[in-house]
Image (cartoon, rainbow, N blue to C red; front, side, top):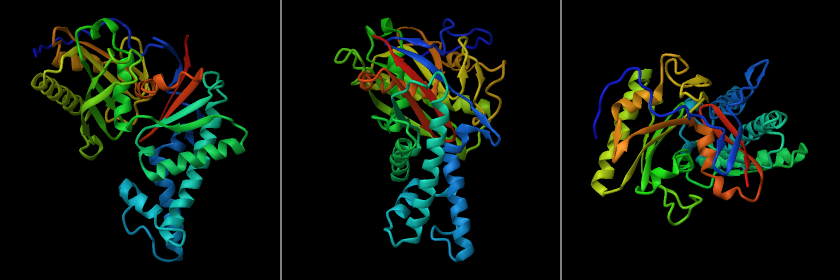
Length: 354
């Protein structure tokens, strides 16, 4: 694996953030609808749920002891919240959790209603929910309640969870974006999923010889870094991501996995065709929207040659990539969307093409 420094050279052609993709069109993504309180999507993020739960606990404290203890809601692990939810109907902790879930589901349903008034979402028949929130029992309960509320509102849209492990969806989706010519002599690709709290990096075996629609693609190695706990600046974060990728390359060499000279990077925000971020990366440390910051180039400088040729580093919106992991399972509908509930609320909508 060779490295070199070229400050002004960008990797590959202007093909980042594409809307016209094999088999599907991206109708819209990274919608940022506003109301008097700010961005509409912020009301249905995992961060918003924690704040909402804290308000429920404060009301309970006025009447006596907080059933969830002394820690702030943002510091409680998903396992702790799930155990509180499972405390039974007579449990005060369970009562608080159910109240917070019901209120959050109402907020999420209202956000979906707002989205579906937009031209890019108007025809959506099914919504898949990804991100970190639905991997918990609390999140799953909230999604089920949201579906019921949408029916009551007269919005007949199916809603369900991502088929893959949520940590894998944002990596597997890149199998649909790698140039097909790169797959002929290679087994796998490298992929990165950048979120406001975590970064995931992994090796995706495309298994395209067994299933041309990538329905059998799988992550064979994955590393997850909770960068929010370490508080790195933008440069430190990029360096750590590059280190993660190089670790994946070394693993592939040991296991004789034939990596394509390709790295796919999913990132929050609106991605311009030249690979710069136009807007929407406000949950990441530092100014990721800067005209002086080009993430694909910075990663390419660390690994310009990968395997048998020059590396192609492509970037797209993280919700789009996570949605593409569901593409093989969405052939029975024409219009569909994805919401990723994490630090923020990611979104993308698609139309299948014949």
